Image (cartoon, rainbow, N blue to C red; front, side, top):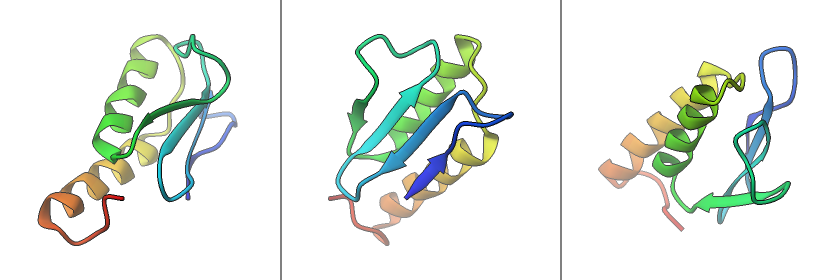
Length: 81
């Protein structure tokens, strides 16, 4: 699943392989091109907020989608692999 792609409104590429959520790009990441941040969307949403604080462009839709998934997980309606 793709949450954000590089483009005019995004300095980051964020995706999930079904197990983990990855973030690529931006000025915030210092650990290399791919950084596994979490197995849950709440952690990635927080990471994307920190990208914004560092001056990176992050689509609001990515943060909103991760926040919705966090709420769904809390209700037990989606897998938390």
